[in-house]
Image (cartoon, one colour):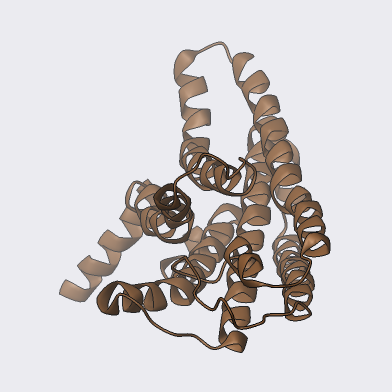
Length: 265
């Protein structure tokens, strides 16, 4: 709301931050209420269609955040490595187009997997999901039919959603570091890199837990560990994002102070 309210925050970086906030709200709305219900009542029920919808909603938002963090790293790359071309490339129309395309792509990939899950047979012999939300692996464990083709689809989409964006982020920051090393003064390097610190923190938390959850083999992992890891990117990351991006941000602090001052007047 602050970003849309203040014209001084109408820049690509803050536009992406507003989209990150919206996706975080959508993610916690999808996961947290049902999770709190489970905590309060120890066990709760959910319909099959409700479970599929929760998975589709969750996976769409997670995929979008992966692409959005990649887009934010590209934004930082242009701002530091090509500052003269930044304003001519990162126009508002292009930013909106990127966001809409990423939402469409994320929802399409989530729909493919959700549709494949719907085509599986669930015999009803096992109907307890050993998790606090409807994720892919717990759902596949309940199926009494062959899930090989769904797992192959998930692996291919995992490459498009996790591996490829992560490699692009790593490449962007490699170029950023090389550019910063060319700056003679240490204060200049620190000032330029400070704009990337918040983004890198979120990337490490978000991608670290996602990669650990979906790429590390499940053998040897306890059930508690397999449940705690998703909590980090479904609950913890959306919770700390406002602190990382907003409360430590000088521009947003100034806007808040102006609003408070105007209200007092």
